[in-house]
Image (cartoon, rainbow, N blue to C red):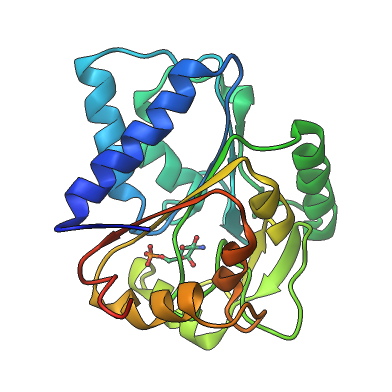
Length: 239
Ligand code: GLP
């Protein structure tokens, strides 16, 4: 767990870690995340590429999740987010970019397709992760059990209201998502976990110093052998 005076310093280190994997591995497999937390890391990565060009043609990416009902061209989809914050700046091959299709005709079939894809990909080199206010990772919400496989999830009211800021109205805020399960996260060679801001301090404390429990999915990371946690001082206040 590394605590930085401000979020930008944490983001710089996060970008360095990702870039090192991209430069060193022959076929890097990156698990990517959305939300406000990774934006700074993506920005830093893009800045580093501008200063010292780096090809991403050999890189494959696997995103954690997508809203059910939103197609890749919907402005609030995670696919659009990834294009906006990262992919438009990289020379990645389009068929190396993997994000669940939230607008698939059959969401069950899409979950199955994504799970098969992840299995074929094998172990991810790194999984970038943020955390929801209730401890969710990806969209693996707290509950009595966690699924290791890709699945469809009904978003909790708390998660919906946290995400409502990105949608024009409550009615238009998605109620379901398709998410990678905890399996590929726990199997990834490394996890790069980021959180900023005071609002996350309680759940960070719970996740990393509390019991390992499905009621705080991020607490499972205590069992992962290689997790790098990058926090600003505000997010780390409870540790
Ligand atoms: C969403 C995403 C998560 C993310 C969480 C926190 O629910 N599915 O992957 O970690 O939001 O988002 P933020 O970083 O905006 O606080």
